[in-house]
Image 1 (cartoon, rainbow, N blue to C red):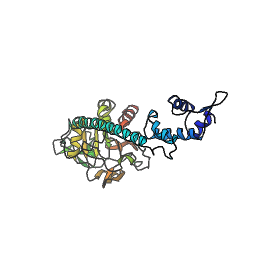
Image 2 (cartoon, rainbow, N blue to C red; image 1 turned 30 degrees about the vertical axis):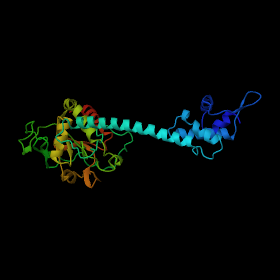
Image 3 (cartoon, rainbow, N blue to C red; image 1 turned 60 degrees about the horizontal axis):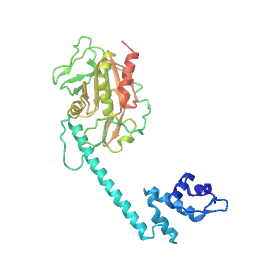
Image 4 (cartoon, rainbow, N blue to C red; image 1 turned 90 degrees about the horizontal axis):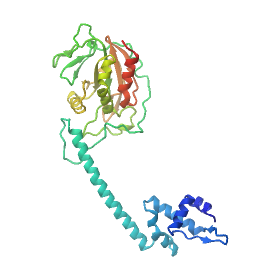
Length: 336
């Protein structure tokens, strides 16, 4: 048979066949017209080379297997030389794995040190700490669909709820835009009366932190992953948001205030987080939630509150890493 037919039947390119010949792995007969003439044995050899390559064996190291077939064995690894090649390849992989493991351990050490540098959560030496990458989003995250669960919110008055903040105050949502209130938070542990203007409240499920695994199957839940990138986005665009008309920005979740306070410190957030562990805001406004890890969590959405009324809602939100820019664009396109 000609080289093209051999390549087709063996599932390789003609260039690969010529390369095998250059290494002496194939020695086809030559016809009177100098054309190469391949047979069924050559097809078997090329298929064997391809199968070994899928195992990670370089083409140059397949000769013992081909020689085993050449002397009449049914299988290419029936010979001692083939087994020795397997062992050599395994030993080489073991050395590479050991080197990669050492590099991985060094990277984990650096990551732990960097992640805990601004955190009040101590490192632990009890086994390997889960080191989920909270900052970068996987490329294949499912995109949340608009299920209409927030369609009723625009025009709804902010409820008279007081939520604890990471600034050791309580914030009353229906007093965010009290016309006679000062532009400052209230005294510690007392309700905060805030001045008029637009308030941005981005509501999120939960924020991961070093040493804590996310709930099982978290990445498969549409809209769940991305709370840390979202918070960092609002941090990085905070001054621009204020310049575009936002008087204040809050993050809000059902996590306890102490947990949120660690996140504020570690991520160096210039704004406060509001804690709603009983999900009182969800009941008051009919906000969408979901179940994960045995807990009921908020679905990701953002409220723009003005004059005590929900002026605009962002829902669903994707990707969360770009959401602060989406809010900034809306503020600029809808100036007061």
